[in-house]
Structures are given as C-alpha cells and as structure tokens.
Length: 185
Length: 162
Image (cartoon, rainbow over all chains, first blue to last red):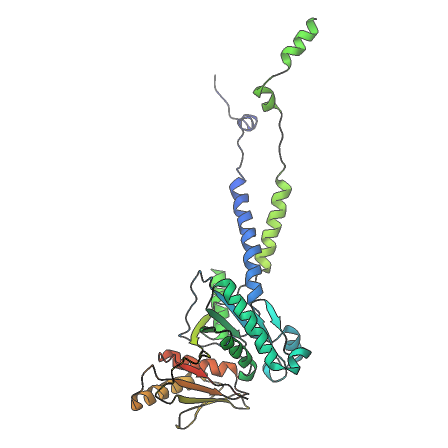
C-alpha cells in the first residue's frame, strides 16, 4: 500500500522548529547589552575629546587595570553656553570613574585645594580597588588648561604614574563617519 | 463487576501514565518580550568612535627624584583670542598655528622640536617643560604633546599655572 504524506501525518511525527538555541542567543545578547552599556555609560561621559592625533595608541581589548578620570561640561552648562566654545562661559565638572565632583559647590569654592585633595583620595581608592597604576584622562577639547589642571594635580598627589590622554586619531567628524560606515557594513 | 474491571484496565500506570500528561510552558509571550527588549537595546544603544590614548608619565612628588643635569626645554603654548595657537620652543620664534589648518601647523612644531634637539645634541632622555597659559585650550596642549610623542620624547613636565 502506498504511503501518503499529509499534513496530519507530519504533525503526528512532531516536526517542529527548535526555538531553544535562538532564545539562548537572544538572552545572551540582552544580558550583554544590559551589562556592558551600563558600564560604558558610567565612566564615559559625552564630550568632544581632542582629535587629529594620528599616533595615539589604541587601547587593548582587555584592559581591566585601568580606570577613567573625566573633565567635561555638564549638559545643562552646554545648553546655556555658546555651543562652539563652551569653555568661555560654562563651568566643567570632574569625575573619578562615575563619581562626579562639582567645583561650583560651596565647599570647593571656599577651598579649591580641598577639591584636589578629595579627588586624589578617590583616585587612590579607585587605583587600590582596581590594582591600577594607569589612568585614562578624558577631557573636553574646549576646556582650558586651568580647568584640567586640578585633575593633573590630583593624579600627581595620588601617585599615579602613567596617565593616558584621550584623543581621536583622526578628525572628530571623520571618526564619526568611520563608525557609521562600520555600522552600515 | 464487569464495568469496574474495564475501567481499571484503562487507567495507565507508571511511566506510561506520566507521558500522557502534557504539561507545556507557553514560551510565546516570553519570546515576544525578549525580542522587544532586544530591539529596544539595539535601537537605543549609542555607539561612539574608538578613542586613542597618548601615554604620559607624571612627575612624582618624592624627595628621591634625581634632578636632571640639563635644563628642560620650555615649550610655551598659547591660545589666541581668535582660536589660533602659538607655540614657542625655547628661545626660537613662535610658530603660529591657524585654526583652519592645525595639522600643518603642528607638523611645523614637530619639525622645529626635532631640529632643536638635533642641533643641541639632546636625546629623548632630556626633559621638556610644557608651559601653557590659563587660557590655553586643552586641545592645543594635547596636540603639542602629540608632537613630542611622535618624536619619542616622553619626559614631559606639565607646568602648573596660576
């Protein structure tokens, strides 16, 4: 007798699309985004770092014994200041990892050295915690040297030996264009 | 009696009984939510260009630091009100770097430093003192340091300005 293949017979055999590996992969992706995006956001504040430094070294993939110190204009200051040269009017803030220090607060305005000492303490603690002797210094290109100087003093006080100054290897606009090109691919 | 016997024979026992009980977890809503989360994260994630780094060594505040035999070469970096930059290496004439063509200007700075070191017989071990002003842009400080980094001159002191 000839055996016929019908829908009912295939259903009886249990022909199903196996969703389990796909769900596994999707969960891994979600976990990745939830964890990594949070970490990146904490230490990498939005700012325009210096560009056109062709010989700047690219960081290695697994750099764990490094942490970031940032000097940047808070978004509120940028909105009220001249967008092209915010350094003239806006006041920057400092951040050791994700902890922000505002030099405009009363305690620091009375005694600017207290701000440096406080940052130095936090830098020492972060260096001890991460067993790091190297710091990434990310500072907005529109800042003045006087605005970045307290961080350099705090780093020296905290006995940090190596400081790596963040800079794009190409122009800012070119770096963004390269990134969008990679995403398109 | 007859009826009860038939019923008893129909009741499966052991593993056969368990196999007929179809307990299924509905994963369709779970997949929906997971996909929504995935799409959300993919769309809201902001990517940024890869950053490079210029390593520098800060001088340590310790008494054991040995004073250098040679005086450090002073490099003064000034940002002009119109956004141009002026770099003076030692006692040489200042080099003006236009805001429109910074790459060419800093290339001149690099060449001038190289020539000075060659003329004076200095090596990479000789210190350099980078002296910006209060108003010097951080961008210009980093670009000047980049010139030194390109020449393998890493013994740089960042001056403290008042």
